[in-house]
Image (tube, rainbow, N blue to C red):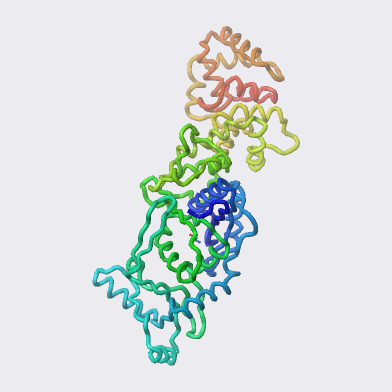
Length: 480
Ligand code: GLU
């Protein structure tokens, strides 16, 4: 294992889309490992796909990491700014004979792949231009052919590494698809755009990355990259391949599964603390006695790859919801109000100055315990800001025997202004006696009148909140 006194890890997102939950989870594991060892967590923006990379995706990724609490060290490295170093490495590999120019045209390669498919063979480059004679090469150049640069991968090579998650790994050179393109097709006297495996090796080495922690979909790349490290004479980092995130059906989580970008979770009202906590559990088992609820800092104190599973991690909405509810339930009413106020303001229900702070906090205290995600605080609070329609069940209740008498009796007793809990209970008892109805009938009917529904939070607290503005009396009157 590399010297953990100088742990340097990196997240290397491609800004070709918004911050995906898989990338964010990779970020979490990198961050935890760095913090555990007092190391550095670096960022590299892999924007070499010039067509698909967009500055707004970079902004989204940085913003999402920040929101999750995954602060990185130093300035992000921008891969496209390092193209000189990438080209130099390719030049070095050409000079040392580890790489060569391949003049095969796209049409020729296509024909090769079709033939392989017809013979039921896996697609691979047949290394046809590996050992061209200088004359053959000159002939292709004279034809005006362009060339890619390919890196030799010997079929007989055996590539091994000790993976921090998966243990001893071994790959056969023959399974890597033949000599690998490391620079795109370009005029034969130039070096075209450098490609992923090469640039990652050059950049990881330049950034002195000690541990490469990334998703297991990169395992075959790791085998290729290890060959490149050797050919370039660079020191190998330690590798850790984290399990994929799977959907309910056990397939790799993808855009088709709906919410997969960190911004979507945020917009739905998940808290950063709950999402970060949940992502840590996606593949990592906390040590005995720790429980499943913890902060990133708490996880970092004990994080290690021995407790990262090899098997894919199934995305479990129930667990995420449970964690998120715990985070919300831990807030005191004032803190919850700070989070809900922007949503309520956007709905036009409150404005910063005029709505009574104590009343809003009481409302938060009332609905808080039933919230799972922050947006639930919109539905649950709506009947306190806007007079609700009466639903079917409420209408039926209001027409049932004794309902009218019960509400009428209560309305007659009801004065103006706020009530205490004792006064409200007292009024209910008096109204019951006056109307000659059971307590259950009165309570159910009052709920229907106040909330337009038979469901909702604690009835007496609801009433007390709607009382001071005269709204309780108004809703009872309307129901009659
Ligand atoms: N840009 C690559 C990705 O997004 C980085 C993979 C790596 O960590 O090397 O998958």
